Structure formats: C-alpha cells, structure tokens
Length: 252
Image (cartoon, rainbow, N blue to C red; front, side, top):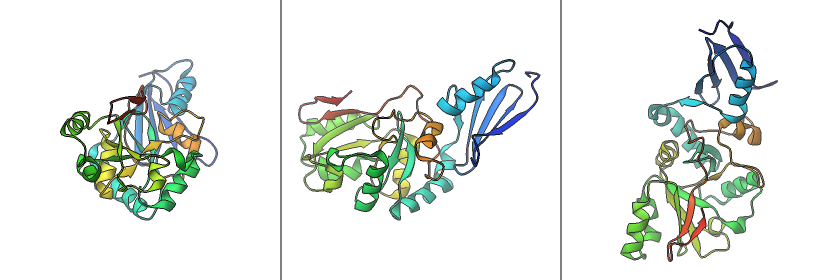
C-alpha cells in the first residue's frame, strides 16, 4: 500500500471517462467502451504526473479485456453499426485503426473525411481469414500465394491485382488492392462478427501520429466514435506493405 488516500477524477469537463488511484494502483474506465485499464504506478510525490502520462500516452498500461468481451456483445453491436454504414475504431496489430464496410461508398467517404485523406491513395482491407480474399488470390502463382499465406495472420499487407473485385473508392488510382489477414484479436473478432472484410487504416488525421492508446484516439475523434475493446503493442507501428509481384517493400 502506498499510504495515499483514494483519488478519483475524470478526463475533463463533460468526459465520460474516470480514473481512480488506490494503494498505488491506477484503474481507468471509459463506460461507453466498457474497457478497464490498470497500471501499477506506486505512490508518493509525482503520482499525478504518472496518472497524466497514462491518460495521455497509455504509459505502462495494460487492458483488462478478454475475447469473451469482444464476442459476446460488443462485437455484434459494432458489427450492426458497420452494417448501417458507420465507422468504428478498433485496435489493429500496432496502432488504433478506423474500420468500415469497404463496399459501402458512403461509409468509406465518411472515413476518408475523418482522416482528411484523398480517395486516390486507396485503403487497406483486412479479414479474419484468407477466404475473404479468394477472388483476388486465385490468379496468383502458387509461390506467391504460399508467401502471402505464410505471413498471415500478421502485420503484413500485400498489394495484389484487384481484378475489379474491389471498388475504386478502396483501390484509388491503383490497379492493386492492399489486403491483410489480421493477427489482432479485436480486429479479427470484429471482421468475423461483421461477416466479411473491413477497411483498416490508422486512426489519425493526416499529418498526425497514429494513436497507440485509446486516449490519443479520443483526443483526435472524441468520445462519440464507437470503439472495439482490445490491446495493441505499445511499441507497434502500422503494417509493412509489400507488392506481391516482386516482393518490394512499399512501407517498412
């Protein structure tokens, strides 16, 4: 025990999130997301600075959320939002991302407006299994398919010829589409609940850093954006992008 009295606060005026320090342990909750975070921060002088670091940067934080929380009710709720043309946030392998139905033009345009991203640049599409990409994988050589499948699930995105199976608001000005089978439990669960592939792109406006914590996500887009509970690697980064025809790295 730290000897400190209990401390309770919120993230700011009108915020739904609350934090509490008791016995040198920090607990944080965002009721709208039904996610609890915990971090052993000790006590004594400077405890508020440590709390602030956790709130702003996710320093030393771990998420208390198991697969049952994803699958039993939060994932179906968010899938319903996606079916209705909504945009949701979800932790990917290395950063928080934004997701929507790749075949819903209105949803994709809303997502692009949030990111201040041009449609011509294209977007990444992810799935819970390679089966959802069967149409674009079928014409690849066996060696190309084996190379891609060996890299999945994981933070490895591949550019493959889209053959008209994905719309121009996904592929942009390219003849290729960027696809990945995700290794993020939260994102895979969301794809499965939705019943197909989803857009997954880093949840940051153009020119700003991708968020590594939900606090950064909320600073960018506020509390109203629906978010899937889940954890990411604090030192993670957006996926590596390669071109399947020659293996060249487009983004390392």
